[in-house]
Image 1 (tube, rainbow, N blue to C red):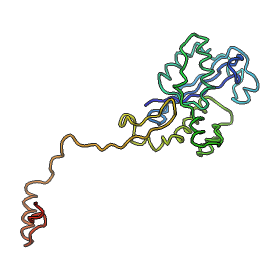
Image 2: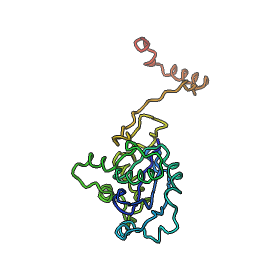
Image 3: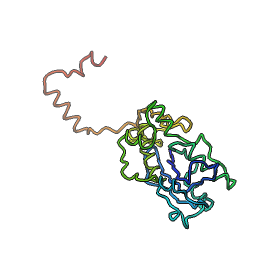
Image 4: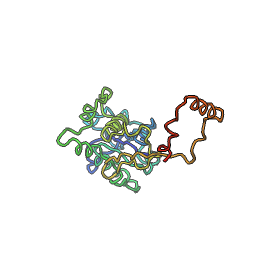
Length: 239
């Protein structure tokens, strides 16, 4: 089962007011385990980079100078995410920006039901508790020392760690991959993890006996020399 954890950095908070995506970071999960495969790109927003946004992400106009436009990276981005479920912290925000960028190019939009929103999972699991990425990392003891500034790839990695803690994926993944047990699934619409059912496996054919005829004969001779009748040879044991 493949999922892609995704995060974006932007020039501001509202795509309807002209804000654009400046970075996308993606992390691949297979059967709730990080594979180490990632995808990341800075993006020329074709506009200025406000100081307030730079203070949050550390991305400046100089960082974006010479970077590709969204139309130049869109195919690589869509190829990486494929048709996988998308794990996103605050999915409406990131999807709003990505769909704005896709709409500008007349490309198919990303359906909301593809998204697994870690904020929604956290709010269901810990009602009333803070559900920011920082707060959840602190709750689960996830190292935040590198998060001096926000960054799409770093935040995607942290979101992946949070997601696995929220669904218990760390424990569920050991030896219980979807290729072994397809009952292990996370619903893309609800974010709820269904633990896999244990299955007893039987051999198609019994193993051949490992006791030789010589060993059997020696055993029978040993029993006869005891001078008593073995329990398993008594009539009631044979009945």
